[in-house]
Length: 360
Image 1 (cartoon, rainbow, N blue to C red):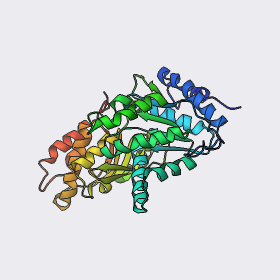
Image 2: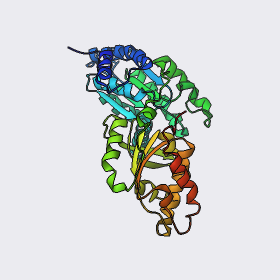
Image 3: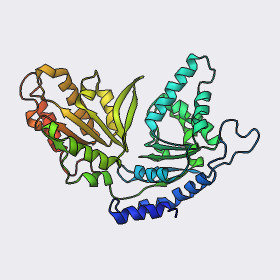
Image 4: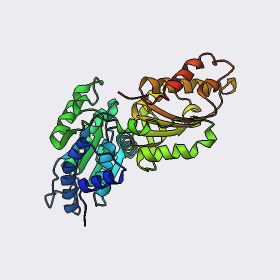
């Protein structure tokens, strides 16, 4: 017998894999209605030209689920996405999706296409009835200029959009350059999506980590513990690379899922990255798992310097850090140029191990 989302949620609560939350429970009927419509209309055509011969089945409003970090938004969207039995669906982090759009538009321009967005939209529409975006946020002027036109095409063709965000639509691209051009997009979201604030008082991501060891040394012995934390925080997701736009180029976080980033020290600190890059990573992640921090010295001074900048960015953004290292924070950088300055970094690493670190 087919279970509703509420029944699936309640079963997980009963099994102990979820903690009952009235705010989360209240969202389920909204998502269930959308799930039923999608499954009943799964074979209806969508596309930019679907309406030329037959009127496409226009869906009910999608969902814009917003609220504080760690409240369970991604978990609810995953529950809805996994339970919706249609083939033409895709779940993707909003940053990663916009980077794909930019790359596809670049290729279209190279082929001489006048409106580079049109073939990009048509390709999405050929394969997609449901688009589920995680963590919608717009901080880049080029994204702000494109996203309104793209969503207008998707909505017009009958694509259902469900998205999570840490902020209400009115706060997207807040104080951004030329924000006036972005305001019609905000109005479109309000008209085409059902807005729902998840007002849970509990930060479940923080709750999961309370009492959990988050700094491991030596690094080689911590692989299983780190893997278990990743699986718990992401629900067992594999994770995908996340490309972040920074000053006209891209910075890649090797693995990302449900607001959790994962990388090795060498992947983030052996590359010529700077403060802007690490700030972008800190803005994208609520938790960062950083593995294999080595012993630091004059021999790897540049890498150590970047590590200091990374920790500063994570600290200021209140990002929860889980890491494996060669030694305790105070013993990572004992001698050589920069060792004295590293004392502040060691202090921050120690402070970030506190059970309530990152809590509002």
